[in-house]
Image 1 (tube, rainbow, N blue to C red):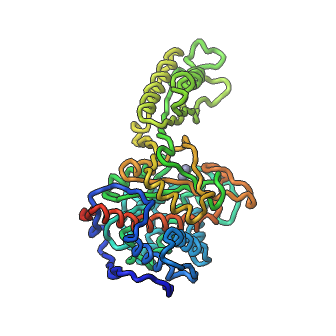
Image 2 (tube, rainbow, N blue to C red; image 1 turned 60 degrees about the horizontal axis):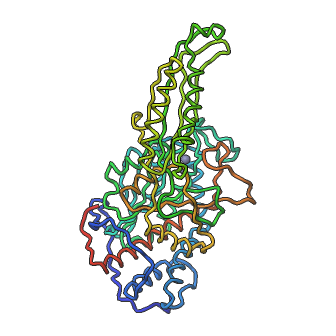
Length: 486
Ligand SMILES: [Zn+2]
Ligand SMILES: [Zn+2]
């Protein structure tokens, strides 16, 4: 601790309750607060926190208690410096590569989950398992409120990796092409950064490793399992090849679209391609349906209400001279409001059925819910938490590297969390042109720039640590008490 430590009458006797989640306490309120003001009353806590995280870094950074914002900034920088050290960086890289070599699809992440639990065991961090089949929730901190959650998704995609490298996927037809292997490594990195100081945290951090983000709505299942009840805030990130390494991008309010999928089977009557009058041609019906579907967004939607409808799949026919019995088409549709979503869904079904019948075919249409895969809600960032994110990220990366992005028509099941818990989701840049260009997610040529790992771990650690301290100060000012069970 620096010799210029302030005189801080701080309670150092915080005790970690190793009995795990059942003893965790939480406040009644799920509110989040604005974090822009640091009063003198909060100063002791801040400086205390600062001292703690100064303690394990060989940096002479503490100067004077009168420069509070600079000191807050220094906490974030310390985490980043620590996360970049070879012992932590190499460890995260090792974990990410292990997971990359053994990709597992949604709700099948058994080995990934086992690896996570083995690492948590080794660090002596308690956790809850299983949650939603393969999910794991680790606990860092005092065991008391407030509670802040950090989320990483664990699942891979059903595709073949084309990148030829030492740690290429060893499982045919499966690949981590969305960076979820990196997300897991970064969240374990948070545990490594904070574990020595778990008892000194001003509340509890939940490390949420969730299954099945890619279409399986794993986040929803985690919520249904009650794993995040009474949590006060949740943060999530996604690596991105669009933004440069060392930069982040997000926005307050709606960030990502509500995303649904549909599949339709058009059934006619197969026959000889040279004698079409004896058959009912589902290929022509499918063609007509696809064209008609394109009119929904262009002709029926408000041009100022962003919507997308893409037919991404068509399967049917097997010979040049045979009219098949049926054709299957499928695709996605996305909007930024529930009303538009339901309207578009209804019209998709009407258009497919009606247009198919014009060409004497029958059609069955299935949407997410019918297929037990719920559509993902709009991802909405809580305004105050986004402000908190901006403050923390600016302190670590500089204001010029904290970008405000436009809403994106991508979907994320983090939205399920953010529907019931104040949440903030952001993109973590990893583009480095000097290392060659990598395509965006879901490409067989997708690559993760592993230099991103310390940024994600340090940002997550900083977001949660500062949230706990600032929340506690704010709650004390407002006279809120903590007494609910987690
Ligand atoms: Zn993805
Ligand atoms: Zn993803």
